[in-house]
Length: 129
Image (cartoon, helix red, strand yellow):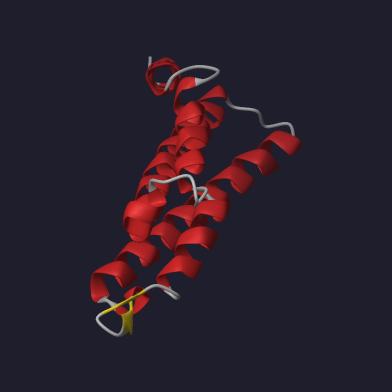
């Protein structure tokens, strides 16, 4: 996620359209702000769950939740990075396409997002049963 942000943020401050950096356009500012917030939220959530695990408070629900949330946010963030780069985001001259493929693997590998949702749902059901 950080790498996708690094590429996109640099690109929007270099690329010009209509004699203006595209990072100065309001919609692009909104997009990069959303990317930054997603990155920060995922990082905080991940560190929080990791800290709890380090202290011996391992919780299947939280572990599945952080993987689910961060994987899906990473995929969306990479799609946004590609959108920031336009056509350049899609070609192999920039790493954003690879970042998207890598992020999508987190949603599929070692248990799909649907399986993670089942783990969370079952844990919640057992708490309230």
